[in-house]
Length: 408
Image 1 (spheres, rainbow, N blue to C red):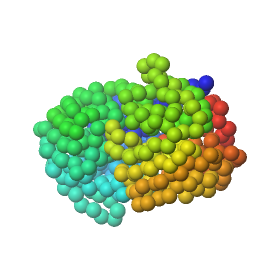
Image 2: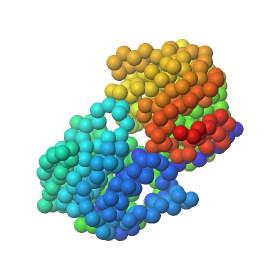
Image 3: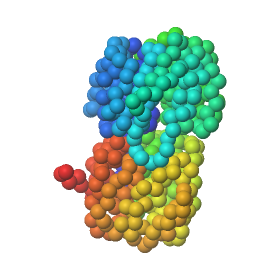
Image 4: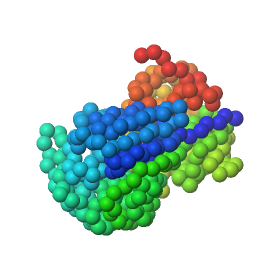
């Protein structure tokens, strides 16, 4: 039986790093994973004038935004990572101006920023677009009622951060309820914000004149936890995960149990995952939280490619989240795509092959497939995987996986 400790959540710490722009005092974040996305956000914040100290040994980062030198977010970091766009709300609230290039990130489908702009515009921002940049100005942000047509995590977070220093009350209706949104709200409240309702579709923010500094521990990464859970199931393994919040994994646990995998909680903050052989086929539909997460759909597809029967996966969040399917087919997976639905016919085994990771979570799915496949697989495009998994190779090897990093 192997053990693995889950790192802090990537999708929680990135918005917190952006939120450090809201206060001139120092902010200390603990349990910050060593990820390429964290490095990208650090480079962006440094370009704005934020002083950053990274304690890698203790997985801690200190940010101080007392002397901002610009409110223009440069093209490079924003192009590489969509979460970089989250600096717009804090910059607008703090400086009354922000200039941010159109965001990039994994090419998994259309992720429009119109909901971000709609909310900020209702709060008093005026936008112009020029040379690939979105420029926002306001004499003073004010409270507003913002209804989101879709419970977008990024839009909820950007509006939430801007509302903290806005004059009056802001209400976000149909807000995203993801644990990472709740963690951001808890972090901001620890600095002096007044936010209630995070984790529900209705968030209310009473604006304050300023925020103080503080220290905060990031929640465990539920997507990393889910990936290791699926790794145990697909390889016939038996592992214990430490530093997990099982309530954040309810949908994943339920689907794993449907496949015949044993999932137990021996004590609070710990999960044991045991395979009982070839999985039973199940159907999956990705949905906003608390539904099954789109960020675990590719990894679960890898598991179902070995199921004893046919499974149907419906992807409702991102229309291009099946880019890994062609690579899995090279390993012998039988998957048919019909628009935004994948029909997965389980095979007795997969065969090692040379493949390329198309994006972060698709890359993780290929790693899991390779661990379960017969023979040797070579996975290129590991830069995608490094965006969201800290020291993945070493941690898989500690669990018994034969994984090696070849020189480029």
